[in-house]
Length: 89
Image (cartoon, rainbow, N blue to C red; front, side, top):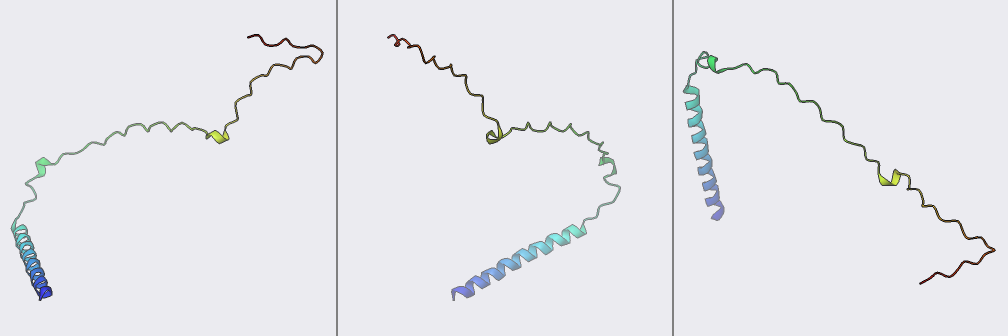
């Protein structure tokens, strides 16, 4: 019984929508517009000048392709014949 009521409701809604559509289609067809009514409203649009293209993006080299920074210079080892003094506190 519930399915039949849903089907009847669907048919009624569908019928109402189609009747409104056909009414609007008839009114649109009945309107007549002369071709010279709007000639004065048309304007010629000049060609727009395009803005210059933006510069290309800067290329960032990935870090795994970059060479490592130079190592800091280490002081030479003390000569082996001399004894270095103990560090002072």
